[in-house]
View 1 (tube, rainbow, N blue to C red):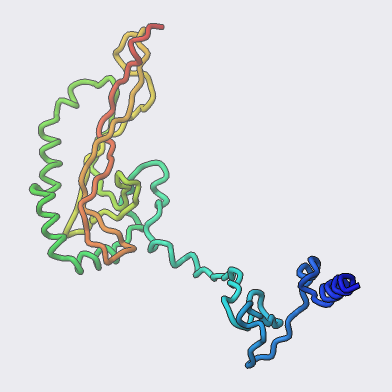
View 2 (spheres, one colour; view 1 turned 180 degrees about the vertical axis):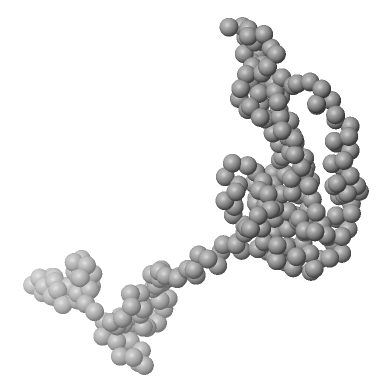
Length: 252
């Protein structure tokens, strides 16, 4: 009888103690917490009070739940702030050639303003570039190349001296060539009269054609849209000769 009573007491105690129930921990009851006061179980576990608000914000003792990443929308400044300063684009006269003669589109006022700003630089560069005045070079060419009038070339060409206003350098940039009354610049241009045509005075068994050749010349230039840039000596591709090209001596 004593043993039965002791067994019944153990069963009653287990039912009364929720910790003895293996299913009790699966659905724990919320702990009532009063801010500013400690709980009886403060030493054994940490109690948190979650309040309505942004996800991840909690009040209580212990390590807070790390907040979720916040997506920040940054308004980009206008794209024009990242663009380089406006520069000279291809002029209308540059559709077929890599240079243009001086015309009404030439920015003479801007060029003169840059020359005045960098007067010593322009004077030094110009004197180094032109040890002989351009008209002296033209006179020497006409006097020493008189043989052109005593015969014919297999590819005829036209020779002239021009004063370019705009020109495209070897980097593909269009710049203004300094060409004023005080600082004139002329280049010798030799262009094919019959480009792509068959070469003269050759037997018909050779497949030939007249091809335009180019050379590289140095000219003093400026960027009229960037007056803070100093004048510089740039390199340009200019037509220089008309040659007869034979395609591998193919007979036909």
